[in-house]
Amino acid sequence: MASYDDDENFGSYGVVGSFPKDFGYGPDEQDTEDRSPSAESKPRILLMGLRRSGKSSIQKVVFHKMSPNETLFLESTNKIVKDDISNSSFVQFQIWDFPGQIDFFDPTFDSEMIFGGCGALIFVIDAQDDYMEALAKLHMTVSRAYKVNPNIKFEVFIHKVDGLSDDHKIETQRDIHQRANDDLADAGLEAIHLSFYLTSIYDHSIFEAFSKVVQKLIPQLPTLENLLNILISNSGIEKAFLFDVVSKIYIATDSSPVDMQSYTLTHMYPPAVLHSHTHMYPPVSLQNSGIEKAFLFDVVSKIYIATDSSPVDMQSYELCCDMIDVVIDVSCIYGLKDGEGSCYDKESSSIIKLNNATILYLREVNRFLALVCILREDNFDRQGIIDYNFHCFRQAIQEVFEVRFKAQNLTSNLQSSSGSLDAPAANGVVGSKP
Ligand code: GDP
Image (cartoon, rainbow, N blue to C red):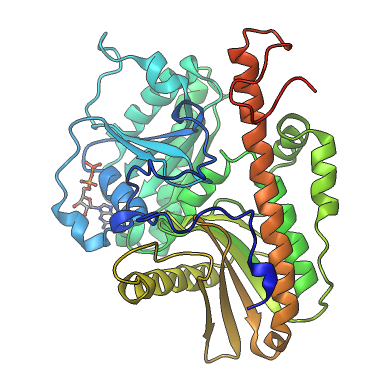
């Protein structure tokens, strides 16, 4: 519609097959606009647990769009599966699905290599089974990993809770929490912090849990949240999420710890650039326009990258996930011209009117991300202003990732020039000389 949609900053959408094949994460060599860091710099998530605890199912349901019932026929994991989620500019991580029986004391097990570059370790416990053995394994895994890399975030998925009553769920979580922490305390490892989640592949809890895990690994989180807050407060949006569209995981929420924020402010972005972020964004104020909530989704995985600071309720999150499924599925079936191009592009948008006078509004942000907003129907008359604010928001998101991209290039240039600041930049993107 408006001319501001012709934003040259947003790279090539015409890349053939740029949308993931079969909703998976295939290689994407043709992506000339790829701003992703190298594989080595990706935060890595390890998925571990006993055999049959549900690791492969989680991976398939969240990242490969498998329906939960199909997991009944999955073969049990008996080797390390390295699943490289590399097609997304926002969510770059790997899932290493370990066989349950792995022996850490086997000399061929290279724990330095495995835990060294790991951002988060998810340990899956089958809550429908006797979990004593799993707890022993959890303790062994965590203490071993912590020795190699004390910065790992330890996440425990108390899984398959769909088979448990509400009371039983709470009791199981309390019991596992208590026993796991007692074991650590007995071993003098109180410094290790475990986070617990109740999960099931049969509802959205697995996406919610994965979102929280991924959010902890994203250094841009506070900046993204700020941008969403500015967007919703000026557009009357009630809730905003940044989603990875294929996995439906959200990447950020508003409850980020303060130390993470200060870390990002001081380490990730030069202060001048941050300053310009907050001032480059000129939203038109739209008080009371009634947008209730907005999510920014990653198109590839359906993780939501960020949301505004209003509370996240599961129902809104599920609605937005369902909307992405509808939009992407319909686009893939009917949206391709002569079977060519990408079914998700800068024209992708959707408005769904619900029967409770609420509107779901989806806009493409870039080839990986979608913003999904929830707003009141009578306030959608001012769509023009909302669209203008969205445009500002989209530009700001682009800026955030350009800063990151430049910072990475600067680092690699400095490294490649062997410490000499006078050497010319290796790739000419960020020069070290005036
Ligand atoms: P792995 O060996 O850890 O990779 O385990 P699998 O992913 O092969 O899962 C083992 C079994 O658990 C399969 O039959 C799955 O269908 C089942 N399963 C996985 N997740 C869930 C869940 O959330 N709820 C229930 N009820 N079953 C699950």
